[in-house]
Length: 115
Image (cartoon, rainbow, N blue to C red; front, top):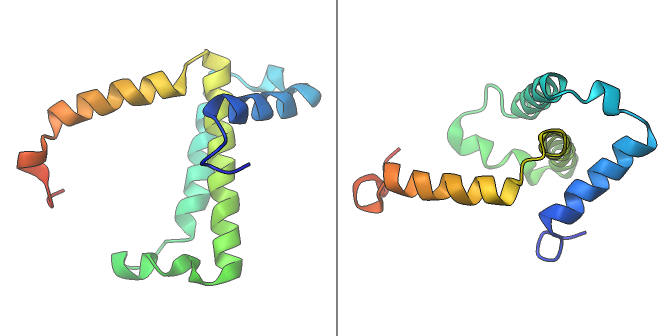
């Protein structure tokens, strides 16, 4: 699977099948999945802990660290997709709607180059 050719629906379905095969639905409550998402995000953050902003861009130059970061990103995505599945939320719709709100909240003219 590659980002350029794989749909969100295909990823969600792959994650759903994986969980279904293991009969994990009883454990996949929104509460547990949201907490798991936070834990996996913290594990991702750990790779950048105590690294300044400029150096954080170089963390993944080391192949082993790049693989470790990629695995944590995948864990985050799995939890996110499982949560979308559990709540029946269309992530593409939610993201599109949020981007419209963000564009209004952060107009380019006012926020370009500023955080």
